[in-house]
Image (tube, rainbow, N blue to C red; front, top):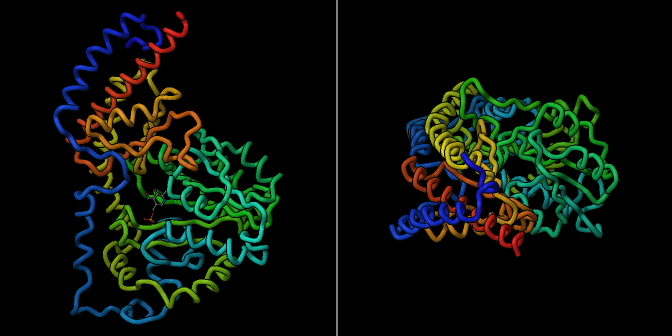
Length: 433
Ligand SMILES: Cc1ncc(COP(=O)(O)O)c(C=O)c1O
């Protein structure tokens, strides 16, 4: 396939005319397709419907230690839920607090507590002139919304195929006491699907931060969300690694069953050191008498154990794999060799990131929108919604049906090609002019 860079002006114009005809056809057909948010499809949600039957009015709703889950009590979650989520994120149940229905909510709460009360006796962040977070980019927009909300300055850290640029992380963290944390999605990252390498995790665990209250916000949202049975990414477990490296308190691990059972009605948790847990529980007991134990019990009775959860995730993968593979196949067929962008074929998670030519992302997303395909706004995976290169587009393949996704991908590819050709024509006329 010939690269657009190598084509003459005439060849590009000819290609453009043909693509425009195809684009017009789609645009006229009144499509309404959504590739914008990483939600599971209805078919995936159906996989968990049996969860609605595992508890009923004839049942004993006591958990293993005899606690009646219908009543108040148990601040940090029932033991069997700690065991299940502990296995899910490879942590000892003693290191876990089970919260409510959302891990994002725990992250918000963690930042909020650090702002008002500080971290382990250190000055509350709200009393400092400046607080900064490192933000590997592209990343999860809602992380950045939390830090922006609290007025925390965000510093972009480029993502490499091995994870965040650790030379930069080590350098900045060791020099600047105002840097209090880093956002991380270490496995099947949102949006690139990158899993941090062993070396990256080990370097994280051995950071020497200038700030005594520096913390790694390790959002393991996609820890068990593999697309393949055998070909899976592996992530070194960071809590144990931090302990080994003499930094036992440096990490907060977050997780939930949002994209395992029902988003918004799942179970979320934090895993961290004993010292951090004490501090968190001090605040927690002021905020709540305890979270939803009935839902915790429902999840445990449905999944039974980590094996049950793994089997369940296989069913999700069977639905998701064809969607991811279809998109990657179309990119390989239509875009590879055209020099119109790059992408990584993820082995898990919820997203594919398309890296368009610099200055093209907004135009591609706008063009797709006009033809009836809604994408995540360009810039969203960056702090303040600003992609310095205007090149990253997040694709969320999970929600639409495979048939709709095929059409949406065809339209997306046409938009990529058209915007890229326009860019080439522009640079050719500049060269000529
Ligand atoms: C990286 C990441 N973290 C957290 C969440 C939200 O998790 P929860 O539903 O547990 O709040 C998402 C959802 O898309 C996500 O992609």
